[in-house]
Image 1 (cartoon, rainbow, N blue to C red):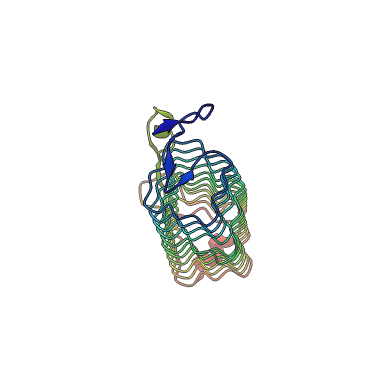
Image 2 (cartoon, rainbow, N blue to C red):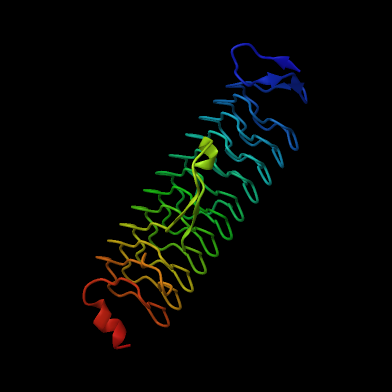
Length: 278
């Protein structure tokens, strides 16, 4: 292995005949099952590349182009992917835990089933219509993210921050939005993990499907839930807890609450009487 001068953390020789360095054009290459961890690969072009089960753990990949690449089972945990391109990429069962994906754009119906996005930064990310079914997104930062029409069924969103997110028409059936452990301090080398609620304050959940969703302790202050389906959803607060599920100033106009558990939930003004009369 040779060290590439001026490329911190970039220890490479030729890999399968390709020089893997920042800004390299590696469109369509096959580097599946390779270890590309802890490298500076900013701006690299992997468009249409085969990268199945390849490890990019801890690498700098700012502005990298993974468009139409096959990243099935790839490990991108703790990588810096701010501004990276993933249009049309296959990311099924990939790990993107603890990564920086702020402002990243995914394409509608893109397959992200079962992806690990725990503690990942997705602030202002564009994820309209993506398929995230069964993904793990514990503690993820999704504030102001665009998730309209996305399939988030059975997704683990415990302790995630979805404040101001656009979830209009999204499918959150069976999703877990309960309190969870926020572990972000650990990746900074210290601190104590603490229990945090899932935050949906000011989120747009109009016409969203929350059938059977678990929302115990969630914060839905000023959330827009017009015509949302909350059938059989659990919004109750467990007995003995002071951090109630909060729907203060939420807009529930036309929402379906058939079978929903609202015991000890903090409801918008006037809704206590409506719920009591059910």
